[in-house]
Image (cartoon, rainbow, N blue to C red; front, side, top):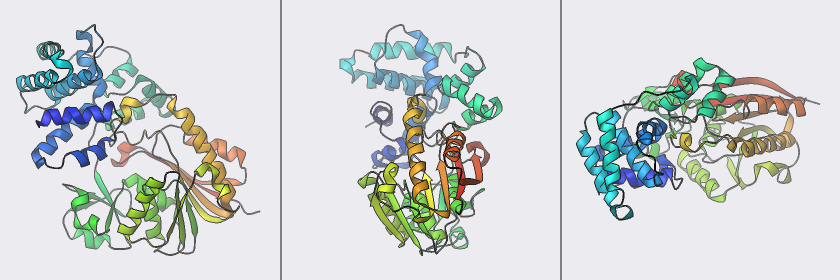
Length: 417
């Protein structure tokens, strides 16, 4: 199968059928050599990352509705024409026409050829619109989120957020201090030191999962800002900890390491298959102080007695707007109403965490999103409803500051009676 046809098929799975890009590419590129893997990944991620900008380049050349698959084919072809200098336009267009011939009995082959020839002839279009619209199209965001961020964080930060989403992120691992140390891992020359977390290393090149360090649990794939969540909660060897939304387990493993495999962590998730992922991760990392329970976090008090836990991690389900350079497809699907259900769920989980947290106990609420409704305003509402909770620290980590994901981390204490 040709490289571009494979990229096209993967884009259909991601953009139409809702598959996760990072998981799909890891699974589907087995058998391709390194050069082809790199090109396929570039086409897929680049098309997702720049979806609105490249669609803007050709959409006005047709008045007819375009099938979703054909739209993707045009998008990935325009991406290659404008962003991949080493591939001549004629080769990109010829491949696109051949791929189109295999769809809908070749009905769209001539259409694809005509649109791409017009793009080739006219070149890049100038973006028209106000500052919000220009930024949104140029960086491939829905205009509504650009306006929301500008209102919440200011225009300067919004520009940085949008432009940062177009960068390729670091490959980051957490040192599993149960099995290794920074000094030991740095001897291999595969890593450079992180900027934010003391146990973060940047992996230089290749597949982390293929390394001996990963296979034997000396490292765990985890974004650097994500590592700050467990460090902020800072569980000790004597603590009983509740991890309310634990899957896939990266923060669970980090807490186990901070606790030196002592004390007790109860890792929960509403989905049994996701909890199995946590168990597998803990086995690889050698974490032996973790118990598991399938549980709806909005009903935690039905499973645990009141005032049971010394420390609680609420790594809440969220809109994920802090992970956009790592999960490009989120930009394609985000809708403002998506937040409504998520905010209600977050509120329910926090209320349950309060019930099972001991007086004097500490809780961290974290999200990997950038949205004050899910972050600062969610905490404000929680504190107003529970005046015996005090905020110890509250931080937003923007993804452009440390070339990480974006995170919100708030640490609170339940006051003694």
